[in-house]
Length: 137
Image 1 (cartoon, helix red, strand yellow):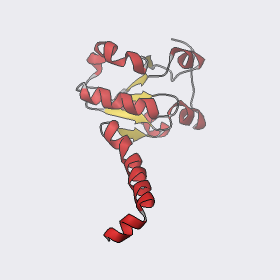
Image 2 (tube, one colour; image 1 turned 90 degrees about the vertical axis):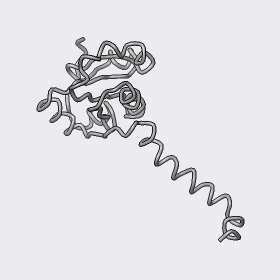
Image 3 (cartoon, rainbow, N blue to C red; image 1 turned 180 degrees about the vertical axis):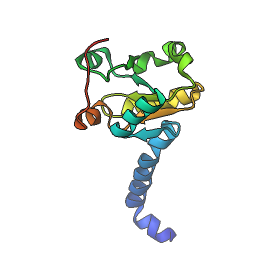
């Protein structure tokens, strides 16, 4: 076994790194649950989920989910008090593709929010499901 590892150290290292990359979203996202656009819509309609968009202002202004609140990922820690009153409601976090929102999920979990969900695929997946966006604030 040791001889195999020594002779194939590059492949063993590659396997370890790729395994770590697969586990990283679970670790960094604080165990947040990913939702498809259809599941997010159901949660919004059935449980009055709050949608929090963490994209940059330029991205937000091109279109966002109707009724969503906007707090950029960079401002999230400073502005978390604005959403404190929603701690008991489900919160769906979205960004362009689902990466920044995963990070935001971890931050909210650390901040004591229990029902935190990541919109898997972000706004791209939302549009891919032919769901509406708005430019109204």
